[in-house]
Image: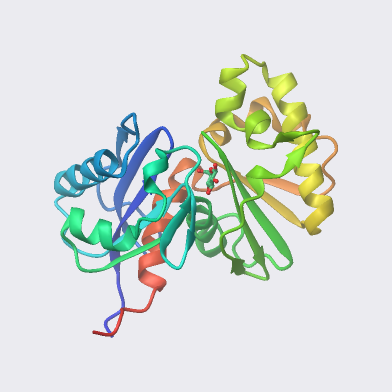
Length: 255
Ligand code: BGC
């Protein structure tokens, strides 16, 4: 099997679809980075149409890796809290292949994809122990690694604390919705990370997603967390790069 050198990474998010063609060896972008708004309602038809438009604009016919903001059971969407409920039950790989008219696709959770980029090429490279990437965007996504090996499909953004799901208080969108300043939001994030650290025995947190762009505003407020906390080296691009890595690391299906 010929190894994949370049792939399109597609990061479907609750507020935007982001994509670029990526050199999977270095993680460098080989095209412009496109971002189009997630349509509302975010039905499969509407979202996949935007994805198809993006592929056309990038003029890409090769393999596509896709990070998706939800969870799967045997390839079918089992939850997608920040998209339309009509995604449930859909076989995402089949739908993508059809909508984008490409042969080779791989799918995975968006945070797992971002985590993969950071573990292979970014802040988690070569780090032993338990590394957790937390994406702070429309929701909260998590990717858990032990000695570089991913435990796929964790959904720790839904961890309940004081009767509320973490992503309803510590995501970027929660900060906006609640009109909180950095101080109040930083306190919630601090509590959440400290809880995860205790429950999982975390050695390193890597923060990604939209909020990671403003890390200087809240890093100093993370006082309860005892382990190291860093920002994703690829920032908000980690999701795109990791999605491309996913398809490069997935064996080609036998016919
Ligand atoms: C979803 C996760 C996703 C995260 C970030 C959460 O609401 O349950 O699957 O990774 O949002 O998009």
